[in-house]
Length: 117
Image (cartoon, rainbow, N blue to C red; front, side):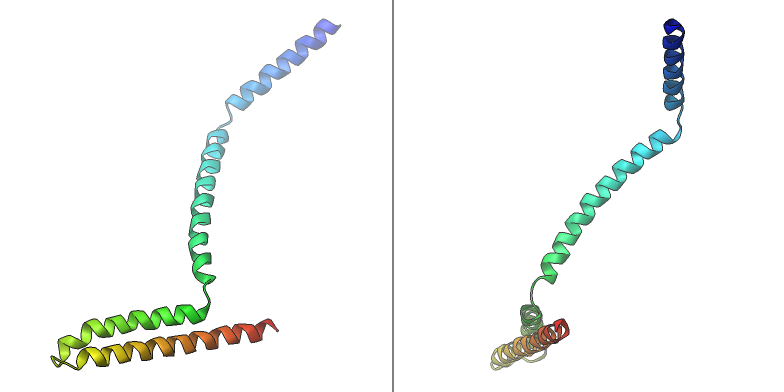
């Protein structure tokens, strides 16, 4: 009797292995797992960059944006006017833009602080 039981177990094991080998979705599942893992790693890297940018307070972001706009003014203004005072004016405009960006960023930070209460 035990010989018959072991034979049945062996046949069931062979049958389950054959069904598993013929499973057409197994390859698709394996590929899907690999693609999902790659996307997860890529998304994690993208979130790291965006999260690190979002962690910078608005005060500094506003100042940096004002500085970039000021540099654009420094580069563009001499093409329109060929006077000696243009560089000084563009420096003053840069400083004003940095101050405005900082004030605007500070107001956004204050707004977020008020929302937290």
